[in-house]
Length: 193
Image (tube, rainbow, N blue to C red; front, side):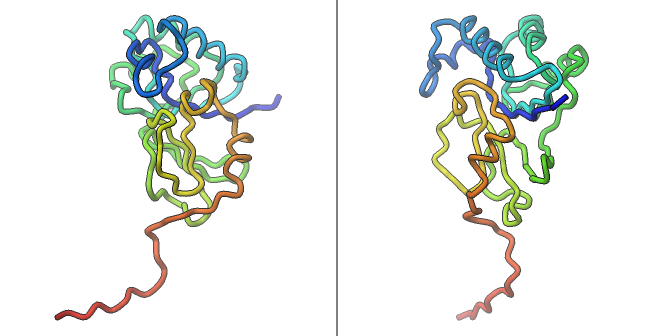
């Protein structure tokens, strides 16, 4: 059985205002949005796959959030977003057997590729100058900064569906790093006045 690795962020289930914020979303009601996002997710993700959700999961109450999350396929690894309250993360961890871990930040390796996972975009991440990638959410397809092999995997940037590892690899395989703070050179001498 082949297991696929998926990435996503910013589902914002049950968040009425997300329909109109920024570029908005193409649904009239939050119920339509929730159903479409669940449908899109389950069209791609199989029950035994792994999904790294990079935060901002749901704005619903306990029962609404659990009902929606129970509909999703896959083993879900959560990287906490700025809107993910500790109370919600606690009940997801306790009551969702397919939520396998909850972290603030995570570094993984998939098929030999190092990947830094964080909700927010990072200017300079661990291993940038050695070929690691950085996947994030938070920006809702509005990020103006590009520092090389990094990608906003949020729903708004990925046609409202998770993206698989092979598709990420295709997008980032030839993207070089543009900046890093790690310098091996000897510092230049500064003369004082």
